[in-house]
Image (cartoon, rainbow, N blue to C red; front, side):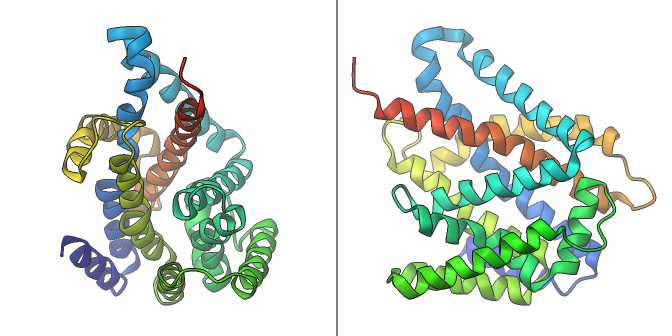
Length: 285
């Protein structure tokens, strides 16, 4: 019921003026989407606590935050390169989460959907958003993004024609395609991020008794995410003066800060997932 209400609220917010619609989508991403990444501490604890005892959190947090800081610096120095890297990493991360292991083509198709469809269906609105995020002039999307989106579409068509995806997968992809067709890009992305990606990651951890043994119910997952989520909000508040509203207004500043921070946290988040998966695959000593 709560998920349905959030979905309806986000969909309805698309009817609001642009800034209000963006605020609704950003609020959903921050409050309902970011906490799934805040469970990284629960993933790191069983890896580090046996070796480092009480020092484990510092050993986890310092490189995690350091890597995030490097990504934020990269946005200032090489914004378009950082944008390309963020999009590519998002495709891989979303695809692995959605398709599961051992399905590389399906992972590219499903992970590429929320990245390619905005470029194909609403290129001008997408360019407007990422011009603000990258803080560069972007009257239209970069040619490489458009070319990659068309390549994704060709791959998706071939995959659909040569495979028999499960009905649930087809329904999910069709629903997302309709959302990106009918709704503004940021609203559609927020629906995907808070309705599918975040909960799916949490459920994966709940079902895995090794990666995060303390997380065995969704309720515990939510509670376990709160301390690091609060720390993330605090870091965002601390960075706000660097993104303080200029002539574009506070909504544009919040958009820039939120998506840059999201990208900055995604890099160590994905790296930790890889390390945890590799650790699981090691034979017991």
